[in-house]
Image (cartoon, rainbow, N blue to C red):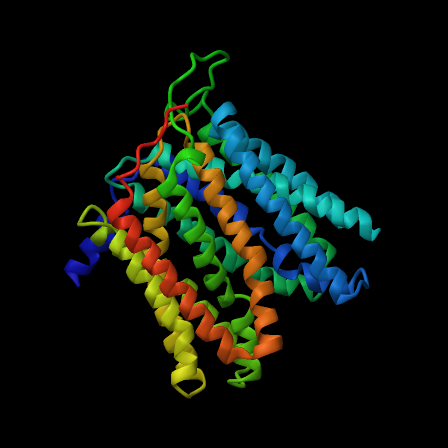
Length: 407
């Protein structure tokens, strides 16, 4: 017990105060994440649009998120991560409230795109900030702490959102907007350059710095493609898998909720000490490979074993283990190829990769299920995951073999 206590204490020790403040900002921001999970229900039940039109709005949200990720990365390198985070939180808060006031379908579509674009500029700026406030020895743990805050906020927001949505959908937009603005206020208080010496103030004029572009970094571009493929597989966890549990394993909504809760709970309890035990102890690329394989196997298991709740739980344990091995160290990979002058561009591409996967993954999964069934989908997801693992294995030995042209 003493050793376990020491492990947990060490896992959270040594992180800069700014990292903790940034994670608290993220927790407040994600605690208000209520609109997106219930957007389809809101549109079909409150605005009385068809399911086809409702899903189109979600696709528009995904396109806006892709644009926002790319734009946010570019602006972060030019204006600084603090300024972009502050602007994204404030404007995003206003846009959430505005979206809730829209009644015409065309205006809902336009407002959704603008909201997603503005809101998503926050992510590359936030990722750049995490890298800035950390060092090479604890950077992976800092990203894990940020993931922990995101997961806790998402869980709290989802639970509260369900309660609120059952009474008044319009309140979701107000709460999402207010929490965005509250997160901006906290960011201004604790991490502004005038109040926190660790936050750099943007200079008005800077000499041109010779650096390299993410677009000329071949291993990184390969990594981005692999991230998209991995994300397509991973997002089945929230898209097709719950429906499979209901239709094929005949699980109740309560049981499905338990499996989702186990995923978040295990990440909250285990990821930080796991990363602490593994970071700086060998080639992290092999951990990404192992995590990708585990994630693929967690879906393929449905084609080789039979069962209901216990099978769902085994799958959840496997995908959670894969997630904890792969995702923190994927952040380690992209940050290791950056410097303070181009980190936003790299973060923007990485953010956009996940947004692309979030658009493609659910749609692809639904199409495969509709035309070929779940069994084919799980084999396909397994194949893509193993293909990703092979790609990450290639990167493990080739990531340093390509010269990056300076720009």
